[in-house]
Structures are given as structure tokens and as C-alpha cells.
Image (cartoon, rainbow, N blue to C red):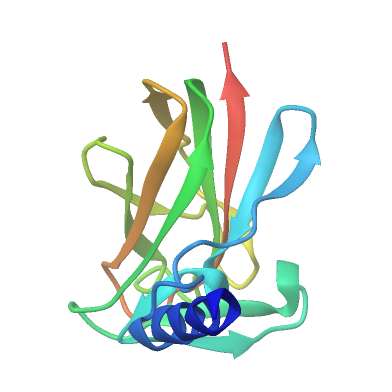
Length: 155
């Protein structure tokens, strides 16, 4: 009987979109650096596309002003430097907005066009306690291809 209810609950969560839609895998790069793939975020009016050279083999394109990619990850208390990686096909198509935790929304873009690069400025963020951290990427300009968001522990 217990197994039956667990199965029903799991199916209900999958259909409600709560199972793992906005909880991407946290992938370690080194001792103090990890990243999450944007294609694993919950996407609203956005599409994932295959792209050779992207980590995970995919990027996400936000379609218009209503588009967003959002996720919640577990984060330890501390200071972080956050960098998004993206490809802008032109200088008029390279910007997007980033919000992490309770920080203010900030506009970000890459230095050059035509290749996946980190944003020019890192976003500094303090997680006040161990627990969930929300990440929100929003549309600013068309055709920006979002790859991943990297977190680095900061002093």
C-alpha cells in the first residue's frame, strides 16, 4: 500500500512540474567552483538547442520579453562570484538579465560575439545561510544563447 501511494505521489509531482524541472544538477569543476546547465532550468517561452562546443551540448534561447529560465540549487553559506556563459551572435544580441538569490537584477553580456564566453563582469552574491538559492535569467535582447552559470567561492 505504501509503495502504491509513493508511486502516485511521484507521478503527481512529475505532472505538476515539481519533480526536477527547476533543480539542475550541480556539477563540480574544482574544489571551490561548480556550475549548472541552463538547459536544465525551468524554461518559460524559451527553447533548448543543440550547439557543438556548449557544455552539455546545448544552449537556451529566450524568445521575447516574457521569456525566462529559472532554477533553485542548494547553496552553502558564503560569498560567491557568479558568471554566466553565453554566445551573442551580434553586439545587438548579446545581453540578458541575471538575478541570484535576493540580489538585484543585473544586465550582463559577453565581451566578444560568435563564441561561448563568460560575461564581462562577475556578479557578487552572499548566501546568508545554507539552503536553496534561486537563479533567474531573463530576456534583454533576442537570440542570446545561454550555456551555463558558474559559481566560485569568494573570500
